[in-house]
Length: 176
Image (cartoon, rainbow, N blue to C red; front, side, top):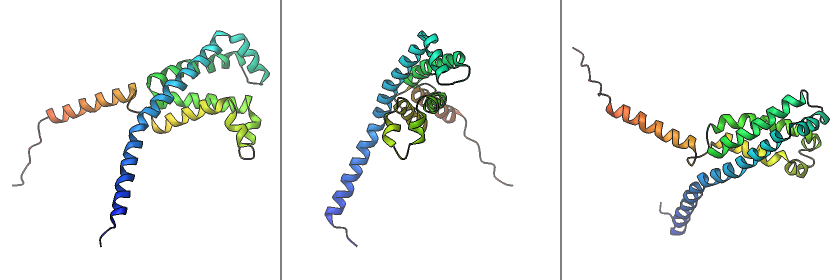
């Protein structure tokens, strides 16, 4: 059965398109890590530089231990943002960032969370949304090859390959 040339060209074009789009994935991950890592860092530094104000705000939201939680949220965002920016330990780093953003939704934007399906615009325009979305994307897809995690992974892979190639090949034992 022969295929029509137009179908072959379409298949080749589609394959080229998919390959091109795949090349953009590392750049996309790099851009969102750099931008939102910096945003997390700046937000965390803002919290840490004015703990009394953040403590008062957390107290008004009914968050228990507002002083301690102000330090925890600020530190998580400040250093988590730096780790995201560097692409170091990203999948682990995103877990406390996601948790912090879930708490932000539960306390500062509860109506947006309650009406996620009836008023989705309120949910996606709430302050924590883009921060949480970025953390979820990096958690699910990793930081990409243009990161310290990617560099460390390549180094470890090369070392493992070098060890395997340097090790003597096992001799075959023939049954007697």
